[in-house]
Image 1 (cartoon, rainbow, N blue to C red):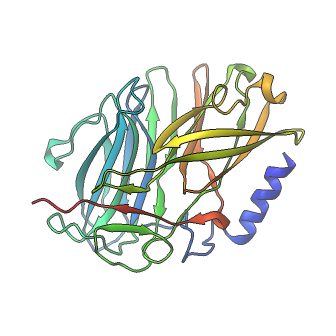
Image 2 (cartoon, helix red, strand yellow):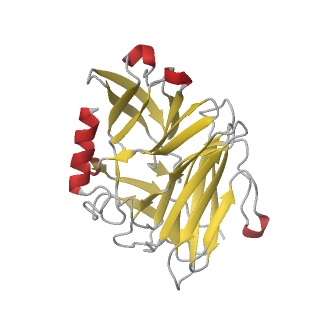
Length: 303
């Protein structure tokens, strides 16, 4: 895969994993004030999330949303907010399909979607603050023995405003990217299946607006033969490697492939594949050269 190797070499050279353009693109290896979990699946699997407050002396409140749909209803999303209090150096974990009454957390069982949290100044006012001490990860596992993990995607705060708008614009918070790069095995090779899970945080909670848009995919097989795939997207999608991405062994003719997306909006994504009793998954690569602004307009606080 000469093309993917070259692309990743360029990304490493500009410092994707060491802090490229901190004022613009998010740094994936640093804690942040916002954490995004692109996939919570409590329909086919169970998902445990873990969040760590790495500050050695300061407690913090987090606000969050889970946006998810029930089985067989991918267009019927529920959006539910919650708050979490973390003491200094606390590592908090939550099986998201099970309620934690002591913390006021409901059970998000039989739902599939995504989650994001951000640091706030307190449970009452809930204004965003600069608190780049948050790290997280997610463990997804099923009764068939499948299990995989990924890291929550952090965004660093650059200038705290406290206006109930999360501006991921390179001014208030670092931006995500509109180009993701992934590689995997072709569907059908050694019985392998796969899924690319993608979410988007362009949300206006007050006016109930989330845009739908297109994702264009360029894919290459191991012989550098290319193909293009056009995908429609709305807030959260799981793209099957065979049926949606058209990357089966009889479609790309080599055991492996790699892809790059182009879009007008930022994307948060993870990739996982399975065969038999095995599963593996991880974060996709994010191209900081395509850092793209977006905003989450939060509703007023109701006490």
